Length: 425
Image 1 (tube, rainbow, N blue to C red):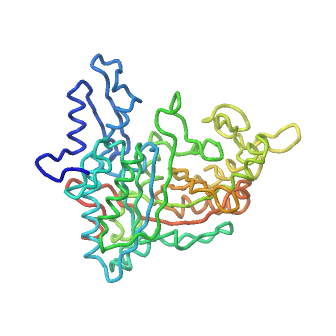
Image 2: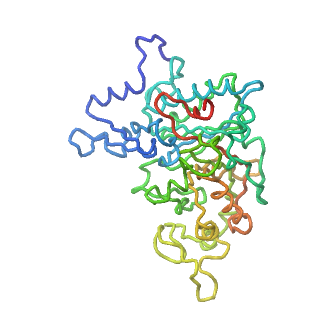
Image 3: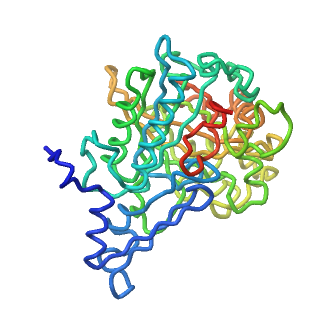
């Protein structure tokens, strides 16, 4: 148990300061609203020591800024542990209650992401940990606008996604008034944030659904690499890069552009499509390596296209083999989802893997918590998914079980709560 005497309470940030005074210094830089987090902890000789990059001390002390142009958790590097959940406002709750809730949630998120205790009622779950690259991202679902009397301010891009023939959706595990994404490089830090925000909801909102995910821990590989999914495939090679000239245009809503003034509150924000995609791993593992690579269109070992090169080599979609067939099959996942095949449609994939146990039939309930970001889902996710729905070879090995679409407003300014321009504008 923790001592409740305020005179001897020690925040997680103060604990980190004590460690730093003993010979390690932590520096965290936020860029693009917390999009990029860096750690520069080193030993006293500057060459590493116990605080060398990649060590536990460096991993724990990395901090992502809550304030900024965009919310954290969109372009932030993938973390090892993730939680996503949706809430519905309680019966009778409306705009007033939503304002108070977003104030509470934003205050807690600002504290937690800085490595501080959540407040006087902090549970102490992560008392001795640093911020661990914690990010907390908030969004609003289609139904939120009816509940708060703001339907005139609901953007058309938030219209419900169309039905896809491969969908096997559970309505109880999709959509929702409010959405939260949590990511951290420590499981306890991530759970602490989850538990804090659930308690903060109080009587104003109730959990509609919640899912847990994971990725490889930073430093687990000899050099940084694109994440692998539970099929063993490198996943996310074709992601647009922040260094590309049109990155912001593809991922973030422009500050000025088409649409009524009532929708201007989304400037600098993005839209998140969330899908629970179960992987039929037993069926997949029965395929030979060559068959798996034909389904994807890339080498399993390094993600290189079947037409040769490295992971980042451009797909040669016009290459044919000696048998007269395309080297990258016409129904290969990489071919169908390529931006060049979809009028340049692009989205930033930032998923987590999940494993929720073994079913009664002995098959794993495992797969991908697919999360993708775009300035407009009608020009990002929807056209690509329509093409995949019509003939993707991977469809035989996956099942879409839950779905949601959320408007994620811009990052908060100092002393501002997330969504304030919408709720008070």
